[in-house]
Image 1 (cartoon, rainbow, N blue to C red):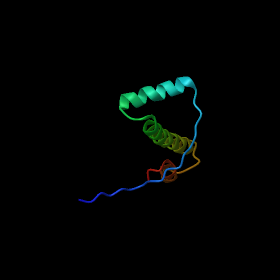
Image 2 (image 1 turned 180 degrees about the horizontal axis):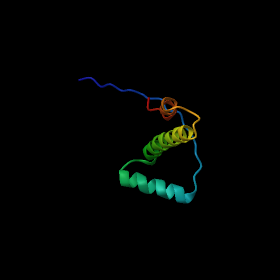
Image 3 (image 1 turned 135 degrees about the vertical axis):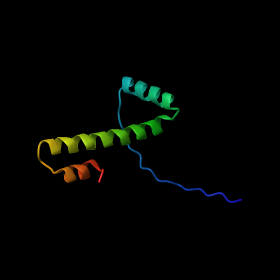
Image 4 (image 1 turned 90 degrees about the vertical axis):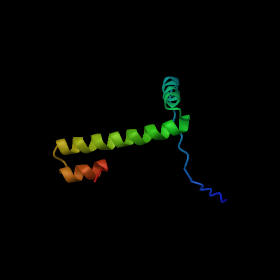
Length: 77
């Protein structure tokens, strides 16, 4: 039997949040049965995706970009 270990390097980023935000984060982590770091990474990924999409839609609605360019901005093409 063989064991394969893969070490993944992930840089550390510090973020300051207030006590209420920490309590919300801890509550969500508990609901999802995850540790705080995993929940933060998930929230960051989903939040960045939402921000990119919103920005792309706003640029498209204002006529600054085409639908194809907006899709590229949103990361969906």
